[in-house]
Length: 124
Image (cartoon, rainbow, N blue to C red; front, side, top):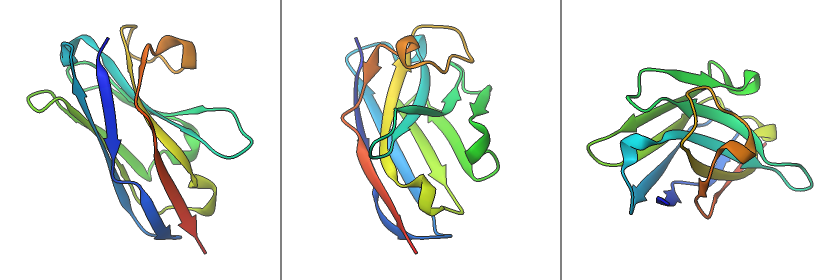
C-alpha cells in the first residue's frame, strides 16, 4: 500500500485560494488513480476530484467544477489540488487517496490508501 501525506491546508477568507499537496511513498505511484475527498463536521466523506494514472484525465464533483484543479507529477510522486474561489461550504478536512481501480472511481470503497487529512477553513 502506498503511504500518503497531505499538506497545505489552513485558514482563508471566502473568495481566496489554497493549494493542497500530497506526496506518496512506499509504492509505485503510477499504479494508482489519485483522488481528493473532504469531510465536513457531521457529514460523510465526499469525493472532490480525481486524476488518471498518466494525469491526462481529470474529473470533479459538480460543486467544485471550475474552481478546483487537480494535477499530478509522476516524477515527484505528488498530487495537488488548487482551490480557487473558496466558499464557506468548502470548509472541511481534505484527504488524499489512492485507488487501484479504473479512472473515474469516486466511491470511498474504491480507494485503498488514505492520508491523515489536512484542515481547510474558509471564513467570511
